[in-house]
Image 1 (cartoon, rainbow, N blue to C red):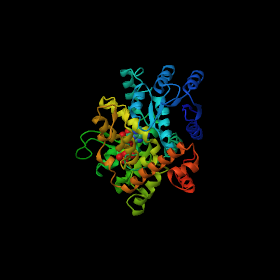
Image 2: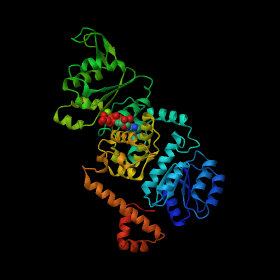
Image 3: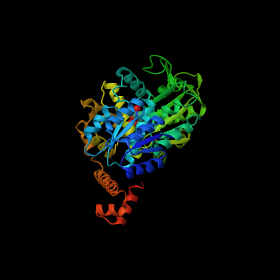
Image 4: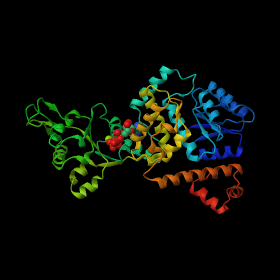
Length: 454
Ligand SMILES: Nc1ncnc2c1ncn2[C@@H]1O[C@H](COP(=O)(O)OP(=O)(O)OP(=O)(O)O)[C@@H](O)[C@H]1O
Ligand SMILES: [Mg+2]
C-alpha cells in the first residue's frame, strides 16, 4: 500500500482528501502545517507527498526544497490555486513531480497520484535539476521506452492484464480483438514474453499483406525452383516460429483457400514446404488478432467456423482508449518520454489546456493516434510544456461526436463548480446549494451523479 502525506492548511479540504484517498486504497497521513509536516517527514517514510503551496507558517516552495533535500526520490505533487500557474512552474523547476490546480475533481487527483507513483518505480524524478544528470537520465529513458509497456490502472486495464497473465503460461490459442491502434500486437508479444516459449521466436505475420497465391509459401516455406520466382529455398513463418509463438495479424483477411491450409497445418502439427514431400514437425503456439467481427464473418460464410474455434480457445478484447481514460496520463507520460528520446528533446510535460483537450477527445485511433499526436507536438514544442498550438486541429475541434464532447466539458465544469461550492461552505450542503442557486435535492442528485461521495 502506498503511503501518502497530505500537507494542507484547509483542514476540511484536507480531511475530505484523506477520506477519499483512503477509500482508494492509499495509506494517508495528514499535516495542517509545514512545521508538523517536516517532523512527520523526518520520522517516517512516504511514497508520495501532496502539498499545498500556500501555507500559513512557511513558504510552500521552500518546503518543497526541504522535502527534496531529505528525500530526493519521493515524488511531490503541489496543489495550487487556479491562477497560480507561474508558481506551479517554479515548483516543477524546484523538483515537484507534478502540480494540480484547485479546484480539481477526484478523478484528476487520482490520476496525478497514480502517474507519480508508477513513474517513480521506473524512472527517478525527471524534473529535479539536482538529480537530473542528463546523460544518465536519457539512457534510462531510452531503455524504458524501447521495451516499455504501460500496464494501466483503469479497471479495463487491470482486467486485461489479469487475462494476459492467466493465459500466457498455457498453450492456448488466443484471439485478440480490439479497435485499430489499441495494442493488439503489443498484447500478443506480452503473452509470448510471459510464456515458457519466451526463449524461442515470436514471428508476426500480417495476413492482410500476403497475396493469396503466396500465402502457402509464406506460411510453410518453399524449395528453390518450386514455382516461378522461387529462386532460393525459403523458411516459412511456421518453421521460423518453431518452439515459439506465431502471431497471425489481421487474420480476417485470409482467403478461404488459405484458411483451409492453415487449419490443416494446425490439426496435423506438421507442414511441408511448397515443392517438398518432406514433413516437418511443428510446435507453435498460435495467437491471432483482428479488428473485424470474425463471428459475423463466420455467419456470412467468409470465415471457416472450424478454424475460428481452433484459433479462439480464449478471446482477449483490448479496451479502446476511451474505455481506459484513467490510464490516459500514464500513456501521455510514457509517449512523451519516448518522443523525447527519439527526437532528442527534453519537453517536460503538457499544459493544463492540452491535458484537458486530451481528456475531451475521443481518440478513434487509440494508442497509436495518441502516440503520433504526442510525437508531433513534442517536435513542434520549443518551451518546457506542450501548448495547445502544437496539437493538430482535430484534437481541438473533435468533429465526429461534438454533442458528447460538449456534454463532457459542461459536466466537467458543473462538477468543478460543485466541488468549489462545497469547499467554500466547508461541506455544508445546504449552504453550498444556496451558493449554487439550486435546491438541496438537486445538489444531492448532482453529487450522486458525479460520484462526489467525498
Ligand atoms: N500497453 C502499451 N504500452 C505502451 N505502448 C503501447 C501499449 N499498447 C500499445 N502501445 C503502442 O501503441 C501503438 C499501437 O499498438 P499495436 O501496434 O500493438 O496496436 P494494434 O492494435 O495492433 O493496432 P492495429 O489495429 O493498427 O494493427 C504501438 O506504437 C505500441 O507501441
Ligand atoms: Mg496490429
